[in-house]
Image (cartoon, rainbow over all chains, first blue to last red):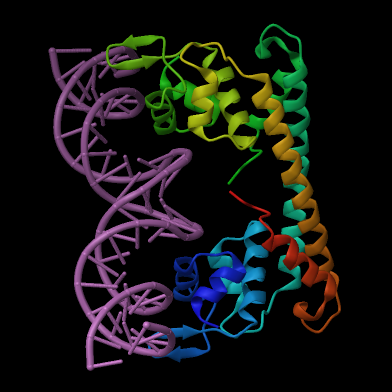
Length: 131
Length: 131
DNA sequence: TCTTGACCTCAAGTTAACTTTAAGTTGTAC
DNA sequence: GTACAACTTAAAGTTAACTTGAGGTCAAGA
């Protein structure tokens, strides 16, 4: 596959694929002339990267997990930690969501006069998004 | 209150407070010489900003919601929309969390050979984090 | 063979949200 | 009244994750 095909199948622009390669996140199997040639499993690798991103890993973290070999070498403890971290995030977001929903429906003249809204402020102030 | 006190009470560095002022997110009530003077409600305003950030608004969006006046003028529909958006995010994250937890526990020789993990990849690839 | 469109590299640009630095001013404690 | 810690501004720097641009190469179709 050439880069255009990978781009089309993955939905990522070619520039991103080159960027990922430069970062060591993916690699082509070779070249035909100047042009990169990828094989089909690149799509799995890209999906894995997307998963990592979605779970909140940085590209550098993902690069470390993938290691230098093609086959991912993912530390199970790392995954469990990330799951726990995600869980905390989810709880915070649920608080936010409920607070926002209340604020949207609340009849207090101004949000600032609504006790629930003020409680939300406390929640948010409190490192909800530390990092 | 001077900027140092606001910084201490809010936990934000003075540089951030100046930056927020420059962006129109907050304002001081005046100056004593060169120095900014804030009144106590700045803390509520900052909490509101923190809330907005935590809910996923950009500083520009927050500035728009706050309007030019001190009192927030938050569109209830906007809040409801944001709550819905958060809700979708939460659902995605729950899928991720469960997938990660499974992957951490899974006994397949490589994550790539585990059907649940592969399903996760699909989830992630699929615009889970579209901006 | 010639043209051309898709690919290439490398460097610089972009955006968000700040932080840092340099140079200057001043309220306040002694 | 003087030293100085803490404030001030404006501009430049930072980080992540890309994107864009300039200038060049090349495989494939007419």
